[in-house]
Image (tube, rainbow, N blue to C red; front, side):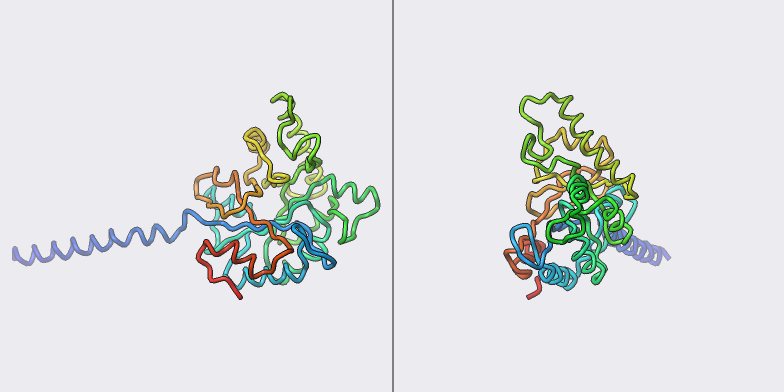
Length: 287
C-alpha cells in the first residue's frame, strides 16, 4: 500500500511539473511586445517620382508586397490601445503613414487602400489645405492639399486615421518645425506650440474630424519640451523621421514617444524598398 502511495505521489508530481512547464506557453500566447515597421509616404503622382513622390503603380505594388508577407496595417490608435491594455494587435502589424496632407492622398491613395482593405494614417498640415481653398486650388492631385472637409470625409471612410502635422509650423524659418527658436524663452516656446498645434486640433474637430492623438514631427525635428507639451495636450503617439523599426510594449507608453519610420522614395522599386524595411525582421521578401 505504501508503495502504491509513493507511485501515486510521483505521478502527481510529474503531472504538476508538466503543468508548470506549460505555463510559459499560455503566457506568451498573448504577446506583450511587437516590432512595428512604419512606412512614411508623402505625395502620390502619375506624372513624376522623387524622394518624396511615388506613383500609384508603385504604391499598389508596395501594398501587394505587404499583403503577401502577411502584414496587417493598423491605425496608430490601435497601437495605443494595445499599449494601454485595451486591445490586441494582429500577428504581424505595420503602420502606413502619409505626411503633409496632399490631396492626391484622397484621389489616388484611398481607392488603393479600399482595394486592399488597408488602414492608413494621414497627417495633414491644416494651413496648407486652407491655402488651397482660399486660392481656389482645391481638388487638383498635382498640387492641392486636403481641405478640412476632405480630411473629415477621409476619416469617415473607416480606413483613415487622421494625425496632426501642425497648423503652420511645417517651415524652416523662423523656426525649424517645432524646435525652439534661438533666444526664445521656455514659456514663449510652449505657448507657441500650444497655439499652433491646438489650432490644428480645433479646426479639424470643428469640421467633424476626431481630435488626433498621433503627432508627426515636421522634418522629424523634435525636442523634449515639444514632446512633453504634446503629451499634456493629449497626444499619445509620436512619429519621427528616424529610420528603423520600433518596438512597442504593453504597459509602456514611452515606447510610443519616438516611433521610427522608413521614408518611401519613388526613386527605387518595391523589391528594393521592402528588403530595406523588412529584412532585419527575418522576412523572405517578395520578388
